[in-house]
Length: 172
Image 1 (tube, helix red, strand yellow):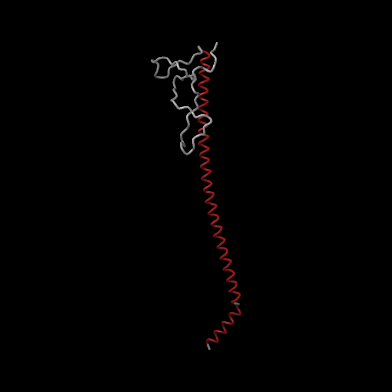
Image 2: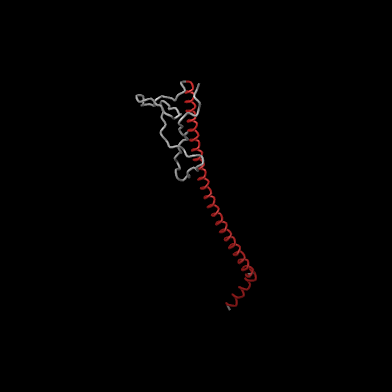
């Protein structure tokens, strides 16, 4: 008796709440949620990949920026050194023109008691400053060294190769 009563109650419940529609609606909602989760994971993976790309790009840009700043700084140092060399040469030439026209015979500091300085180098020697000896700079046709090798070392300044005679005619 109880089984018949519970079956009747179940049938009434099924008619009132329409279980078949509920099952299909539940399946449909489940599939929508499953598709949304898959889409979320795809978007998350794409965002992570894009983030990785932009972090790598930022590192590359930072590296290029550092290299270009180093290049500019090196060129500025070379420019200042070349300007100073030219100014010393111009000052020496104008001093030579006003005096006897010979080379500057001032000894460097600490060498007052030695023989007078009769060089064939057309560059005058400053009385209180002596530039340290440096190898000549590479020719313009040569490629600069790669940035990775000597990253923080500035190249030597440009120097005019010494000549045996003055490139200017003697003053009259």
